Length: 379
Image 1 (tube, helix red, strand yellow):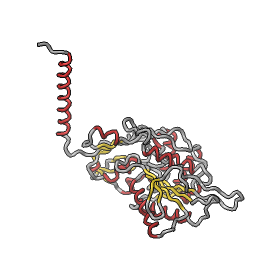
Image 2 (tube, rainbow, N blue to C red):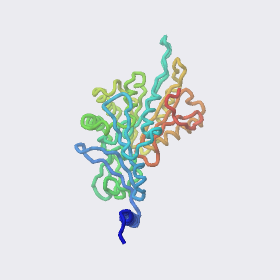
Image 3 (cartoon, rainbow, N blue to C red):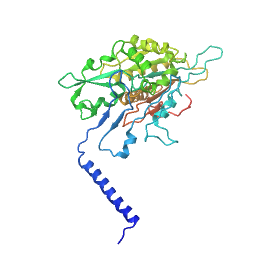
Image 4 (tube, rainbow, N blue to C red):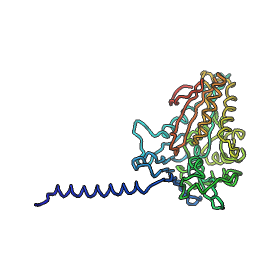
């Protein structure tokens, strides 16, 4: 009996599906005890291309892969406003629900508006202050500064970009693959691992990035907000840097002087507002302590003619720093009601490669609770 064209097509489909299912089954049966994998950017200035950071665990199905892909950051030539972010293929959000980091970029400068000064000059406007981290926050994953991991029992070195370090730090010494190396074989060695966090290296690396790398590699999620703040004469005196780097304040200022010469910013932050807090083994705690001091300094200052409160914002790409800041300030508000009743506090988590936490912006309420920041909301 003859076989119809339909019969032949059905038979072929059965053979193909059977083969595909067998391949899937084989992969599942042979992938026991997977080790998480993190792809690293190439090392060295000349070849540094800093691709989007990608984390994956073999046990996750292929269907989840797009959701785990980190967004690629595309920022045009220097401007005073945050630019758009374009997620990688497969990770695009629905039109009515933009990617969280896209939303965050839109609000990072929204709150940075000084209050209105009195027309007769008898009272200045309310103050807008900005406190920010540098690596992974103001600057992106392609920034040339590296942290060095050492192979246990030897001197082999593994270089990690600062923006990646926030993701892998807790996995050093554990089964976690980064750049083709299992981090269970590596360790940190004090100042030797952070040797690029000292001296003039910040200004040198910043100059190299600006003159040799695409903006999308070295400008981070808070870059636009920092440029905005340092281009407004009313805000620039109240820009504070809290970085895990250990450069002196003067060396940090050298980097900002270069940005000013290059035309990215109009005004310099005050040298006394630049703080390298690394090397203390309590970076998150120290950032929270200094932030409380900054808010205390704003509280007694007269508010503007429009009666709005002062505002201060903090942005960081490391969840531990953001979480400690939020919890420490909330605890202070609960223990001392009214301590900061003339200051609105806004906190931003800008980490784009953290699988456990999405970028977020919150306002601290007077009772220590938090609520989402709403773009355009009053002080």
